[in-house]
Length: 263
Image (tube, rainbow, N blue to C red; front, top):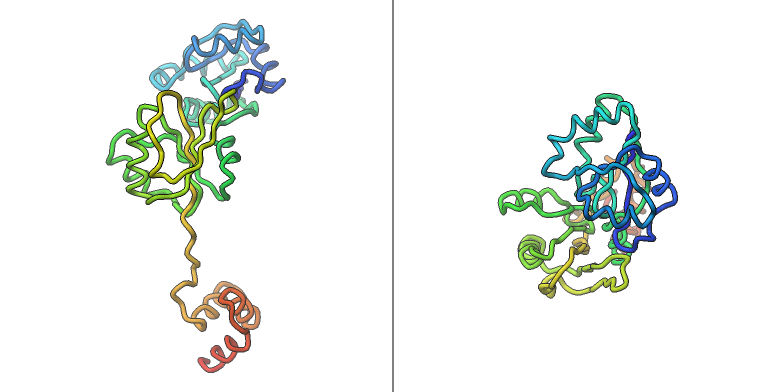
């Protein structure tokens, strides 16, 4: 059995009882950086064989993990938060699934969820993670995102200005919430315009970008075309007329008159 276990993103106390139990019962733990994970494990008295499993050795280590998972209980953790969320794990999940090896997720923290709640922005949201490194890949990536959704990005301190300028060019100036030190003593959620984000000295950040206002799918249609669109979508005529009148803020008799005159 393989357990993908969420670990604290800041405060070491923010870990579930189940997560601690699973880590204590595991035969081995795979983590991104053993040096980073050891303080957490020692804090909870967990002493298990520890193996590195990060983005640079993920493919090469895959078969070793799978072989061990066939007969042992394995825990997979990242440096912070939930494995597979901008961290290694997806390849393993797919391989486990293809070989019918049991696996599950042990719930817990994920930085983008905390940041979204702190921002107060609206759903739906899109978690975009880190932007690709190459500019051409960045342009393709940003072009696939629905920017009417709230967009959530991870930013490295080394790229914060570069990422800000790229997003400003492709999204325009938006209201944003930049969150750092999540769940730690000096946690901050800074609200500003995208253009006002400044360089920072250290840390990783979560940037929540407010979505662009949605354009109604009937904008540009005449009232009669709007009625016909709703009828094509399954509304009866009277309901369509009432809906058009409400959305456009006009008297329903006026919409009825226009619809009858165009029959």
